[in-house]
Amino acid sequence: MAGTDNRNSGGIEPERIARLHEREAATFRAARPKSARAYGDGLPGFLGGVPMHWMNDWPTPFPIMVEKARGATIIDMDGNILADFCLGDTGSMFGHSPPPVARAIRRQASRGLTYMLPSEDAAAVGKLLAEKFGLPRWQIATTASDANRFALRAARAVTGRRKILVFNGCYHGAVDETFVRLDNGRPANKRGLAGEFRDLTEDTKIVEFNDLAALEAALATRDVACVITEPVLTNCCMVPPQAGFQENLRRLTRETGTLLLIDETHTISTAPGGYTRRHGLEPDIFVLGKPIAGGVPASVWGLSAEIAQRYDDYLATKEAGYSGIGTTLSANPLQFAAMRATLEQVMTDENYAHMETLAARLQDGLQASIDKHALPWHVTRVGARVEFICAPGPLRNGGEAEAAHEPALEAAIHVALVNRGVLIAPFHNMMLISPVTTRRQVDRLAAAFADIAQVLAA
Image (cartoon, rainbow, N blue to C red; front, side, top):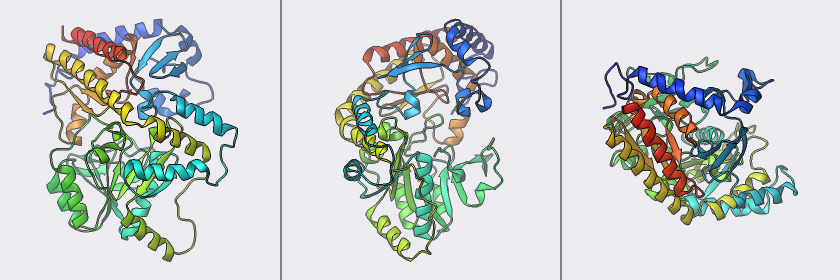
């Protein structure tokens, strides 16, 4: 489904891709002399020249040095203005510094940033989380990685089982036991893990997304504590669930005494209550990070009433000592102030309606260019999250998503978009619409994509 002939990348000759990337890289450098000087051979004092290693993964000749960001716009040190569709890879999905969040941060800054005690905002947030996402009991963490780690620990405690199950191509942050893949059909550690000394497949089962037969067989042994999944595979070439898959996933987990954890960190683009509320999913555990506090680092994990009671029962009988759950700066008052503002004033039906309308417009514009030039590509969308994939589709599983990835082609397109005033996510061709994204910005992205498609297909 995802294949193209061996001579081409996404149906385009490698030489044509290389020429485009070389030309666009030169244009990028010429437009950013101040950034080039500031970055030099890497920012001094940082390992690898950057504060976080993935800043070197952007396909531009050097990282864009940001002067400021506002709304859905980034301005770099050289004054170049970019319509931002990356939005911090979902962290700023509601725009940069949403005014209600910025006001909440300013107000809380004068009241103290952390003190290991609840606040009035904390009382409000507990109620808002239950109302917004449907689960009654919640805990706060700082990243989705932390929230997933803590939730999996709770799942193992409740079930008394060690193993978890993930889908090939999944992404759940830096949760160690999810770093597995299917390699020629066999479970294996993901490639490139730094310092990994364990065979993660000993306690993690892995099957392909949308493969109900494999899922049923893996759960039949009744030794899996929890299935952790995104409703849609998102941190690869995006893979939607096939009809009936989510319903059967819920049925099979219930039949085998396995808990279901839904990680909405990326699919919160779907609706105010995420993909879960939009499609009536019924998770035992719900995790959300990234945009939950409007850009302030924060995450949440929630439990159904049944699982919360079972966990309370477990805690009442467990040996005294440290649970392994929690970090000192989590659940601080700054997080609660920002979360309350986000949940009350930013994550609204009106904002999501705007986001979905423009996302549909973007999807149509990108697909029109693909169709016009008869490129073997497709576009997929989950609410405000849009992605073009340089292979035919729709994709059915993580294996097909991996085969559909065309790094050289995607890198060239990315740099060419930047030179045309548009920024998309660096790791895959993901684009987000925020409440403050404008129709003009969407049309600018569609026009830039059309120009690049014409150059590649000429």
